[in-house]
Length: 98
Image 1 (tube, rainbow, N blue to C red):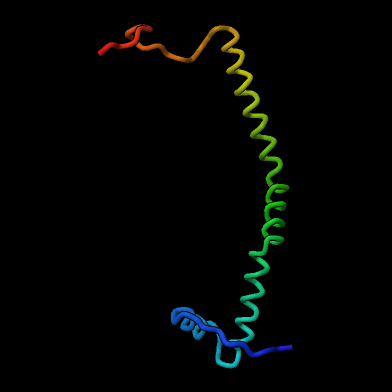
Image 2 (image 1 turned 120 degrees about the vertical axis):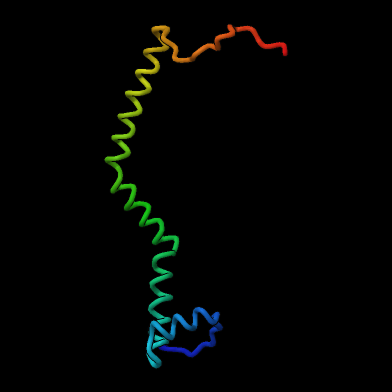
């Protein structure tokens, strides 16, 4: 059931509407635009898109975790062997008094 409502649009939005929809088709155009916008931006839609992206990128996540585990393991092995990558200043360990 269609109902008439009053809507106030900014002039730029009105011009866009005039270019996008012919007279007599504007109500249908606005109705579709509002429904599509609401469907794309609702909390449920956002949650579904995030879930889809997480499932899609699951392999990437596992690959990154494997890469970082090996980097982390190498760093710990260097530390255990005493091969610290921290460089000391050329002035020695003393603090400057200047």
